[in-house]
Image (cartoon, rainbow, N blue to C red; front, side):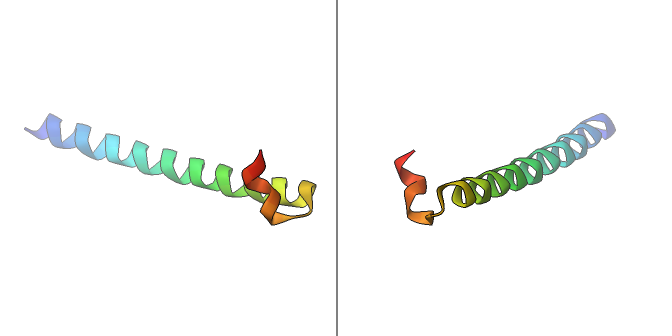
Length: 46
């Protein structure tokens, strides 16, 4: 049972890291797109 708990904790930490990394990438990408386009409404067309 100890190994299972360790695996669950490890996977939750990995998932949290991946989620925060993906979220920061997406937010920075959309910010970059808005700066390039100059209009935030144009984002959905691409």
